[in-house]
Length: 308
Image (cartoon, rainbow, N blue to C red; front, top):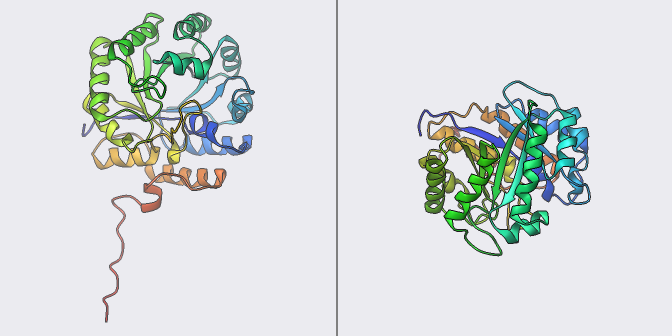
């Protein structure tokens, strides 16, 4: 993939923050988003317009969207769960809304309290609401690579659900390894099949590093021709409805790997590392990211003084 442009979608202030136990002040969220928007990320998933009772951390969605600086080249997007969430998102001028459904029936019922079929019925209303506006619609397919309750999902089911999204006119779809169960061979197989079956869909891949295979799965995705990846600054994140799920793949580690491979991302890695340090100060604990601790592969060190 040397020389190819790989686009990075940042999810820390939604996917990462929703797992934090203490409420992060609105002004600190805005500070971090403004810092990240200077780095060249293609998208930032700013927040989620869901019930504050469901995710209290994101109860300030309107205030965050109103406070951030909007910069050309970085799309500001938000997750929505229903028509009320879309109304709230539209009022803030988001660039794109993200819909999410699980490949697994049991995970979907646990996550959004609906069947998969009912979720798509709701999506139809959302897509209709957004017709004629400038707001884009993206879809996410959670548990694509495995469900903690049902296990691995048949590839035929994954492809059928991608087709259900496509039938609604959704042309940007993220295949998500919500639980970190996926492996490189499986990722390559599913991503390749999805791209063959739906050549008009722009696919992204969303990985967690629960079992240490996150960046290996990115390599498999690159081999399958996927050029968009969702990741979380510092490796922060998880899934509240996936037992044992740890953080998302780390954005700065991902960008560092891609740059070392000769891939172009448009992301300023030093600026991203600065943002990761800011994130650690905001949440008040260490983060899983490795490059911010070790430095880049290009950082050289003085030789130690010879022993006498």
